[in-house]
Image 1 (cartoon, helix red, strand yellow):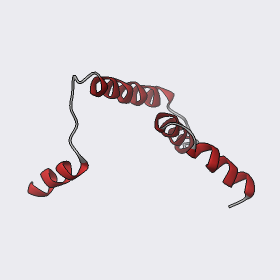
Image 2 (cartoon, rainbow, N blue to C red; image 1 turned 90 degrees about the vertical axis):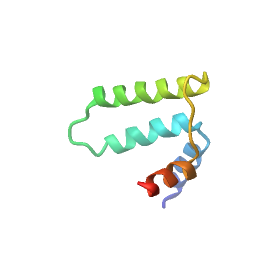
Image 3 (cartoon, helix red, strand yellow; image 1 turned 90 degrees about the horizontal axis):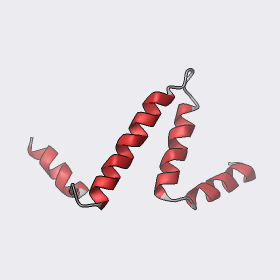
Length: 74
């Protein structure tokens, strides 16, 4: 890893989880030959909607352990 790349990584790790998610999304889409911003915008809106619903307690969340246990039972 170059010094510049390491600095970018260090800076990125200082971002909030949402900002890192957006950065990852943009980086992954940079590999696409034809970007689809409408899909990215739709997924971003959906994710933000779910976060808002969780934070306002309109929906709840299970732990990862509970989710995997439910999957294993199937």
